[in-house]
Length: 127
Length: 127
DNA sequence: TTATTTGTATTATTATATATAATACAAAAG
DNA sequence: CTTTTGTATTATATATAATAATACAAATAA
Image (cartoon, rainbow over all chains, first blue to last red; front, side, top):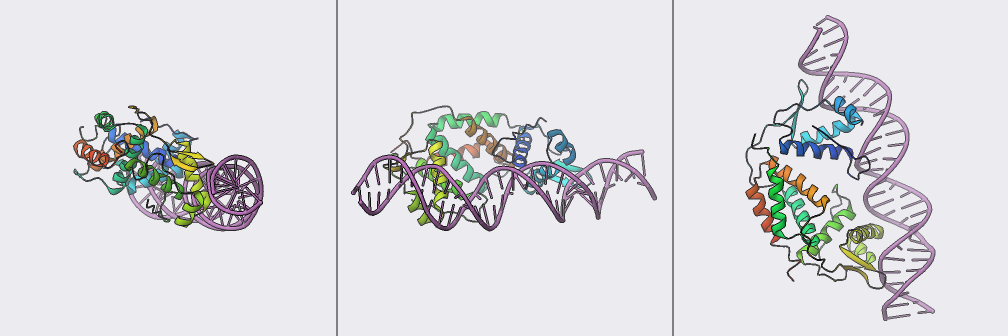
């Protein structure tokens, strides 16, 4: 999986890394149960510090996206059961996003179409 | 307009303030051309520093949400023309949001319904 | 067994971001 | 001419981000 970090971004490196792994899981680029690189290996590949990668892994673990085992390293979590209700945080983020879209002049129809296109690339639950 | 800041949040105060004003504009709570409180007044009301409010106003100005005039203070920008294409930043944020929703087990149908409900509260372009 | 690899913890250091405080200035309104 | 406006400056304190250099426990591989 290709990971590209922007050193000049306002988004912290560990957060960029976390985000790209989350998207990688959702798109199916990283399959459930798939083993992630070791913190040392990934840090070396990306040219960043070990602890920065570790921070991203700890965050992903805390959020439930990956499982970490000392024997086998980090793995993508198995697919959880369907949960129709999104988390309050996700709902609030969506609310802010739609507010911005509305003000920018993107109407509901266009927004829904965009969502459909994005969903079409999420093969997470269709292996 | 009621603004509530969480001092213990990870989100900086100026960003919380910016977000709530954006939502206020989108929901119509803040009408186009409406005058915002002065930086000193809002800082006093919220019990925070003047420069923190100023930073939020500068950000909103830079993003085009408000217009600042030395004579009349800060005002909500007039409604821009319809723009079917969302900004790349917004699209990337939506992509990450949908990725998280997908992994959390929220399917497309439920997500679209949630979007519809949120859009129903955005009266920005229906005064 | 021994050596290596794994995640993880610790400590230190540097740089940047956040927030507050105390002023000060220019421009416009009253 | 005084007040109010946004804005700039300087200083200070705290928190976060990132790196560096180690070190440890647990498990794998030799």
